[in-house]
Image 1 (tube, rainbow, N blue to C red):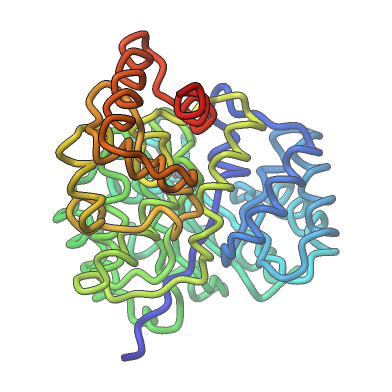
Image 2 (cartoon, rainbow, N blue to C red):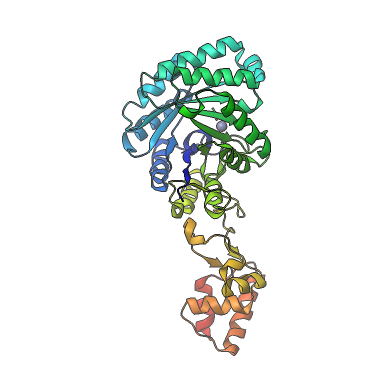
Length: 382
Ligand code: KIV
Ligand code: ZN
């Protein structure tokens, strides 16, 4: 059965890099951009160039380097930002100008001090200006989910009439719950006359820990682009995590019948590279890419896994690029010790197994799960 294809828009190098502790130098950004290309993201947002000369330089260099992926750069709805983004993306094979303005009354009145009419004019002028550089224009209505629905629809109509091809409606402060965001997208799409001529996009923040759930709810409501980051990094509590969204669609294809262009075997490598470049570790129990995501230590679990992996495993570690591991810790049983020894080429008689098992437990009680080298040493010492 043909399934709907979801565009994966990665914003690790823009929204992710904006987060405290996650800044990267230009060389590091290029390394990560190459890995994102290998991962198979459809769109890579590579910076907000007006923010710094470093950002601008990185956008230009990545534009010259990455040829197969759509490259987006972000600018506010003003002539200076759009010109800078447009010029920097000139050498990109597949450029996308991404422009945004806030649409909630709170942001318009308190932050931008703009009237609704001024906001509409800025959207019209900016999208029109961006069209001089490329036909691929994304418009984002910042704080869309807290905006007045009638006004938001006016803004979206204006952006589409001026030539926007993707309409992104961010949950900028991570305020929504899944049922609400589904209703939100359905309402907007039903009210926009030209809804079918554009791609609607979700961009969810994780302030309530709901960014992935909200993104999936948005897809079920009809959105066909999802904006996300590796390891879920991003402003404050972060953005929706790319690896969680992609694997949810893959593992629960029965309920989420969508496909992506992601090579899932590159997920773990992408996560580790980001962590290595930023020096920020991934939490051990992080879904999909955390150190413990596929680790089974309890004896009962290990026994089950040895009999049939499906007892405790809903996806195979190798599908996300992780080598399978049964941790030999203090909760492990003899089954796991024997299995690991077999994998290392040692056939143990029952007496030997008992001795090796006890040595593994002694190590574990000192807080050191037995590695393959430890195990080989124990077996060979006899
Ligand atoms: O969270 C947000 O609203 C954004 C937009 C600028 C796209 O990152
Ligand atoms: Zn954001």
